[in-house]
Image (cartoon, rainbow, N blue to C red; front, side):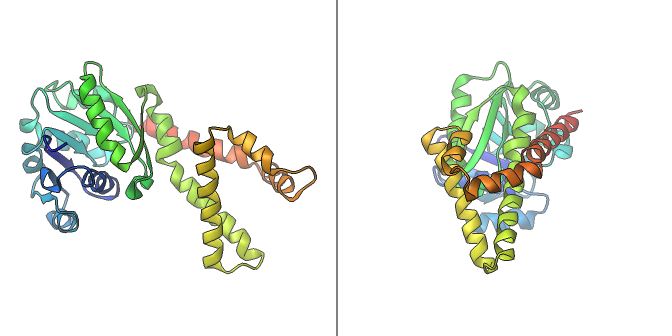
Length: 268
C-alpha cells in the first residue's frame, strides 16, 4: 500500500472513518486530507498523523487515488476544483449517495475511466463497516481489487452491480439508524419493566450485536435462528406475535424502501 498516495476530500464522519481505517494498513504520511474549513483538516491531521491541505486541489495534486467524501450536491463542484489533478490513471472513489458512475464520468470530463462508487456505513468508524463497491465499465480489475483491499481496513466489502447501490443505501447505508432505533426501543421496554437505563442499553445492544454475529458466523437464515428461540407457547413467540401485530416487518420494509427511493431521487 505504500506505493499509493491517497487524498480524501472531506474528513467528516464517513471520510474520517475511511482514512482512520487506511492509517492501519499504510503510512499516514502518504494520505492527504482537505475539508470545507482548513481548521477541521488540521485537527483531523493532528489526531491521525495524515497531511492537512488548505484546498481540495492541493490534496488531489499529491494523490493517485482520490476519495470523495462530500455531500452529493457538492460532487460536481469538487471535481471541477480538482480537474487539473485528474489524469488518465487517477482512481476516483465516490461515496456520494445517488451520484452515478455516468455522472461522475461526466463531471470528470472523461479524463479517467478508473471511477468507483462506494456506499460505506457508520460502523466503519469502529472497523465493523459494511461497504458496497461498484466500478465504471472500463475500470481496471487490478484497481478494483486495490480499492477493495483499502476499504477492507474498515470492515466487510462486497462488489455489487451499480443498479443495487440505491438498495444498498437503504439497507446498510441508512440501516444503522434503524438498528439504533430498535436498540433504543428495546432499552425503553426494559426501563418500563424496571431495569436501570444504562443497564438496559447494555442488554439491548449486546443482544443485537450477538444476534447479528450469529447470522454472519453460522450462515443460517434469520428465520431458522428465530425459530430456534421460539418454544411452543413460550415467552418469545408471544413477543414475536406482538411485533407482527404492530407491523414490525412492514415498518422495516417501508423504512429501507423509503431510503432507497430517496437515494434514487438524489441521482436525478
